[in-house]
Image (tube, rainbow, N blue to C red; front, side, top):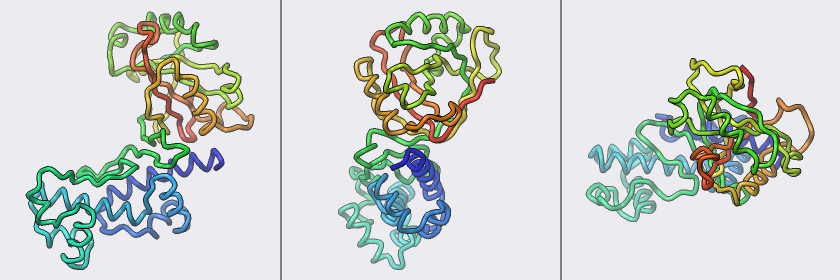
Length: 301
């Protein structure tokens, strides 16, 4: 699959899932989803199967059953109300579908406190009372190590760094020393490395990066630090936090699966964020998690 197509499919799918989960319409037609995505129904079904291991109809049906199961137990609605809410023509049809999914009748489920109302699925997409979703797990074998998430825009203070990881500790220390005290030990502001290099640079193991930390938008920073605006949007995120021994393989995996292969302008490359769970120069066992913006750029303030 072309890199641009992969980005488009993952980004589009998260938006569609948000529409499905938020929709009050029961059921939401596959044709409506296909039109919203600009896909044919057949192509939409292929994308769903490839990335979620479910068809659009199967996913939508599962979400409606999960909503019914939740309301049967927590809100105490009747089986008749649940069947109408789920879009079934009769309570009998609803009961058959419910029993096939949960292994018991709706009336039995109401008093059962052990069985989870969430049905098993590879994507980790479930109905919720808030009608929101900000993440799904990619179910396909070639990219199943990733979740697709939505992140807010963030302002970062940064220093440019070029070189091997073994020599970055001084740079991290210099960044920390430049920050106000309230940012240095605040776990809400996690050290981050921003990569925006070509696929070829990663293969040569010589990517240039910015070492950075998120900052409040109105906080004054020393002139020695660059201010970066990382736009919000959809990101593909590696699900595993990796230590230094696995970091190079994780970066290579990002490059192989998510970065363009051809040479083009820097602005055309998606930004890669590497978020650390601690300051690398403080803790040699620090782990990081990589994520790539799906067709998102970066700007200097």
